[in-house]
Length: 255
Image 1 (cartoon, one colour):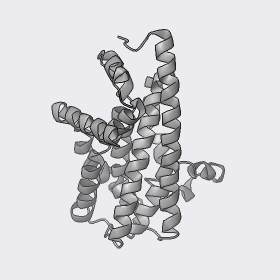
Image 2 (tube, one colour; image 1 turned 180 degrees about the vertical axis):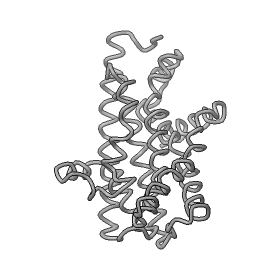
Image 3 (cartoon, one colour; image 1 turned 90 degrees about the vertical axis):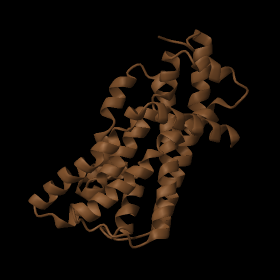
C-alpha cells in the first residue's frame, strides 16, 4: 500500500508540472451543451439527464486511456523506466498507484459536469441518494484506475497501441451506455455491455441523480468493483509479462 501511495503522489506531481494534461476538464462542459441540445432538439427529454452527465465518463475514460495507458511507454521514452524497475518496490504497485493518480481529475470532472448540467443547462440531475453516489463514485474510480493499469501493460505489448488508444474511446462510450442506455443498442450487442464496468457505473449514476430507475444498486456496485478487481489482476499478470519481455529483449529504454 505504501508503494501504491508513493506512485499516486508521483503522478500528481506530473499534473502539477504539466497542467496541459488537464485540458479535457475544459472541454467537458462544452460536450454537455452539445449533447443536451441534440436531445432537446429531438424532443427526447428523457435522455437529457444522461446526455448532460455523459461528458463526465468521457473525461474520466480519456484520462485513463491517454494518461494512465501511456505510463510505461512514456517512462521508456524518457529513459526512466529502468530506474523504476530496479527500485526495491513492486513495479505493479507503482503502476497502479500512478494509474490511480491519473483518474483523480475525475473528481473535478464530475463536479463541474454536474454543476453545469444542473444550474446552466437546467437538466434533471438532482441527486436523490448521496451515500449511493459516493459509493458508486468510489468503485468507479477504482475500476477506472485498474483498467488504466491494464492498458499501460497492454500498450507495451501491442504493436498498434497508438491506433488502439485513438479508436478505443467511442466504442466504450456506446457499450457503457454513458450517453444513452444500452436498451437502444442492437439486441445482439447488449450482452457485451455486461462485461464493461462503465455500463454498471453509468446505470447506477442515472438512478442516483433521478434520470433512471434505481434497480439493484448492490448488483451495480458489486459488478463495477468485481470488474475492477479482474482488471487489476489482469494488469498485474500483464506487467509481469511486460517486465520479462523487456528484460529479455533489453528494451527497457526505447527512444
